[in-house]
Image 1: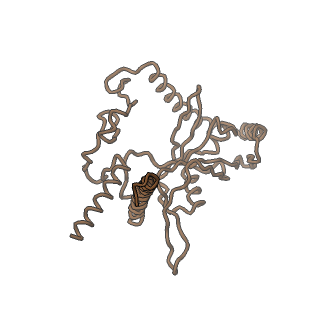
Image 2 (image 1 turned 45 degrees about the horizontal axis):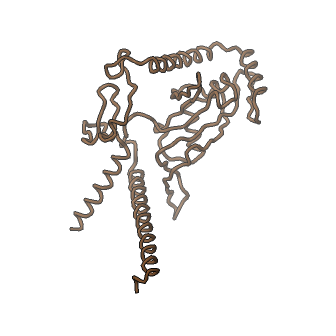
Image 3 (image 1 turned 120 degrees about the vertical axis):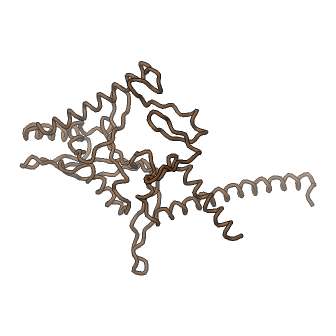
Amino acid sequence: MGLRKAFARTLRRLTGILYRFPKAMRRSGRLEVSLLWKSSGCKYTCHVQCRDQVALDCHQNGAINGCQHSPLVQDHLNNNQSSHSDVEKEKELRTHLTYEEIRHKVEQYNTESRDHFKMTLNTNGMYTGFIKVQLDLRRPITVKGGRAGGVKGQEAFYLPRGSINTLHISSTNTARQVIEALLRKFTVADNPAKFALFKRFSREDQVYTCKLSEEEHPLFLRLVAGPSTDVLSFVLKEQQTGEVLWDAFSIPELQNFLRFLDKEEQDQICSITNRYNAYREKLEEAMRATGGLG
């Protein structure tokens, strides 16, 4: 009987995890959850009950699920295409900037900057400066803890979403190095490959988010865009692969997921218990007021 209860409890936990990660599939196999629905176009996956609430913008040969794009959607796709061309222009510009051009841009940047985060140009053409990165992490991270009894421990918790951190980097630092620097700053033990650096920019009253390649140089993008974070900002997110890479998680991390599920379960139990206790007290008080309770 005890084994059966333990199995049922484990099954409930796994079900909770699957609902948290809609596209929970094994990389090494073809097992898919029957509770999920997958689009035949872009392979987007969601819960079956959520299917009617999802509007997809995936396209094949200029169509969305067999339909032609509306002018609004087509304009949105054109903007995305132009943003890709802008990235290519930035890459091309990077290889053609002379020392004088860099010096001029650095001086212009420092003139427009409203804070103390200035850029400094070295004689060899390399420059240093500051970038601000907003944290937008939805899953808990594993942080290296202190030594308890001589054993190095780890703890998992949620970082506050929307918090902004400032890093001092050079023009040679890549997006991958920026991610690693952020993880070191918070003593995060997770694999850097789980995270990605995005740039957020505005165009024609629309806000776009674009993932940076690991070899792009964020400080160059900051220099070209200027100091205004309304024009360009950086965001750290989890990799948006569409799949949960279970092999990338260690056993302690998976155990931490179960701990969070247990905590949420207890919080829900306490919330419901407190609510009904409050109802009971009000009923008993009303009954005493009418003389119905001795």
